[in-house]
Length: 422
Image (tube, rainbow, N blue to C red; front, side, top):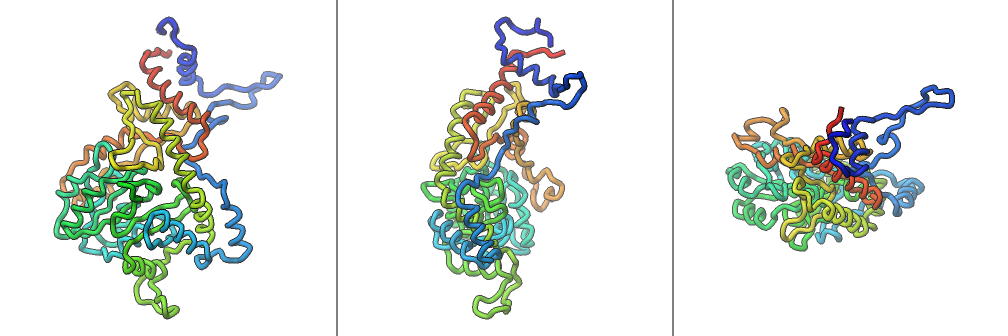
């Protein structure tokens, strides 16, 4: 390090931070001077992006399943989980599934979406959204996202509607609900169904209504990194009894509800096990606590980062309540630090930083003209290239949050004084 390049009065913590960029491993020697190991920050301390919080009745309820022998999909916890979930969302019907992707597929299938149909989906989302459309044989039509909320852009949806459009799949990304007023009005005018991808938005609200209640079906995920988890698992919510009953039959192999082993439809085995549901029940017992902790974490981060011009926070647009599934922000490269440099800085301090999803249109498997149709996706591309997710799991401590905040601040500070390393 060239200390002559440092301004007088440079804080010691900045010097240490710069040194950490160069000194990644410290040799450990015994009394005889022999090398016995290496020490590094990443080996002694690691703050992950997400991990489940299983401090309630999960073990008790799973043990009950094992001791009573009800471990498959026929146990009582499945119905209990569905009931609790429906009540929380304010709908009459909920249907548990094996995972979030099967929930999306089942939602589309229950509405009769199939070959020859088109489903509009945002270009910026996890691949499960578009995959579920492809499973039905329908054609996904990609559109750009809004630059502020990162959810589906209404004007882009308008231009993508054709006489083959049968559904729109808004994705409530990172917990931010789409502009559902505009979307539902547009869908009603064009006689189009809405299937809400709520994999990341449990606990999010729009105009005081839970995400998932605005369309024909809402689909949720309970993967290990979601707001509540069952390990793997999903849930559908419905307002319409007929659609719910159709989905219920399709989920259970297409088998008749009144005539055992008689199949009226080609269905699927998309059922949730009683073991999974037992964990889900325990998680739902703590849902308000979990959501409050998530929002508290976001509030702390927002307060710390709001004064940085180089950061664009996700936040909440008017009439929305963000559950902050993942705390994600834009690192604007025009202010000296890129997203990837920030991830590297965090990693050197034992903190996981996660880049955003790739735009669907950039991946060869989805880069088909029938999906893209000459459209461009500048907002999707911008968010993908610059968005960064920070640790935001429920049990994140104040000390850990402080470490994350300090590492982000340090990345800007070190860049600002232009430390010269040799």
